[in-house]
Length: 124
Image (cartoon, helix red, strand yellow):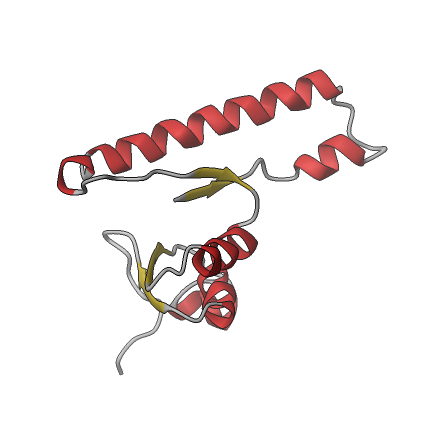
């Protein structure tokens, strides 16, 4: 599952300061959806042969809302999620979105940092 959104879409659509038309915002949303879907396909294609059947979900929204809802609705036993956030105390360890999701789900959760991630916390 991949949850995507266009950052600040609401501001672009509803702010008196934004000078983008509905059509321009719709185009930005469509481009972001296509970009996100392509990256998701690239990531999951490498594993498709090992998962029979593989179900891919590409949903628009906030991961912190969509993931817990989906985990509950589908009775997910284990949730594995990538995490890259770097802000606040939660960001140091697992990431802000993962921290929010973890507090909401009843299933086991495994968070994975990206390859090359270096923790800002030292053992000394």
